[in-house]
Image (cartoon, rainbow, N blue to C red):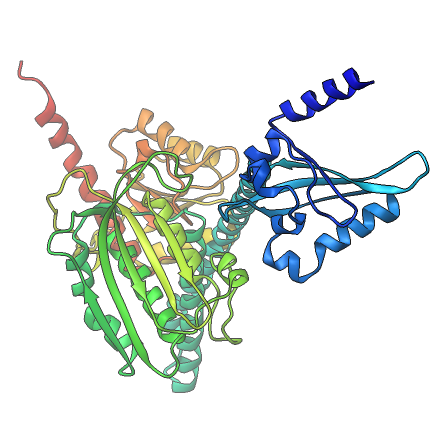
Length: 520
């Protein structure tokens, strides 16, 4: 028996992964193994006779957990729980604790056997796994919302195309009754607001066209400073802080200006009694392993306010489309989702930091441009395409009857002869029957044969025939990036300019081909 007891003592003393020790009936330590010394940091002579409550945190001591543990073990024979425990040096670890009541042959309590295991690594791994699962869930949720939003916006653009186009044509024919004109203008403005709404939805879904260029951030902010000040009002001051040297970034300047304006207006709304907005920038490097951004150099443009801030729940939902804390009619809930979509499509990231009553900081992370030389962007308003004067024979293709009717009416209003086709297959047949067609205007998203597929067939048969692709969102393959593109909804003037642009490009194409041909 003595040999058996000695072997058991050696076994217990030799265990290093578990703290195994005895407590007397009042909870004082009466034995101590090497595992307890390794885990808790106390030498045997430092802890024998001390009460085991010294391993508990102050919060647990205030709740009386040591007494509850012994009382439970005494009553039921066993107590098991996980929680924070304190080492000799004051650091904490997450412990799995088991306390068993030890009784003699007569059933009399003679003490407690206590086993403690450090499971901090397991707990951290579980937390990381839960965090990864939540991140995956959020990513899948946002992707699903993005797909739904993009599809809704596409269909909504078709409806707005018919509404806006018809209203514009109707205005040319309506009587000069001021009341009637006011009502018509009101309908046009409402439809245009709907168009702006769909653009924000498409931005969130990352399905709008971006004209990525090399952009000087301080210069861009300086260019829109006056607009920002007019938008936020005199009660808000803007403080700009930029380093002496900041690398240029890759971005769409127009979309970036729109994002900056949205964030400034949000900051203004968070400070109803006035305050200060700080716009600053810095360069940073993102290492590999970041799930949101690729490794590389970035410039971070931040917009900070002194406003009400957001709690964690609001912050977590801030980029969800249609989620807003503003009053009814004061916000669509698409401003931040739009900015998020623009940043993701630009290869960057929107990062929000906020605390209640401590303000909010929105950070726009944009990749540093590989080519630092800035090419002056050509703004849409600077393009002065000369509308085509001669009458054309145009083939209009669209599977949506409302949109097709509207497109035909607009082309006829411009003085052109129009042939209609409701599908790509019908269009090919009409092209065979009408070899004198001057131009094709086709929708992109059509069943069985898309606009780009139709364009491919046309280029095989009539390489010089100009084609305009009409789309509700950015959906073209990269091979078709140079094809004249007309985004829905469009107005009569935009259609006229696009016709002139398509004809000019088609006229210039033979010269370009000749210039590229090798000398014989």
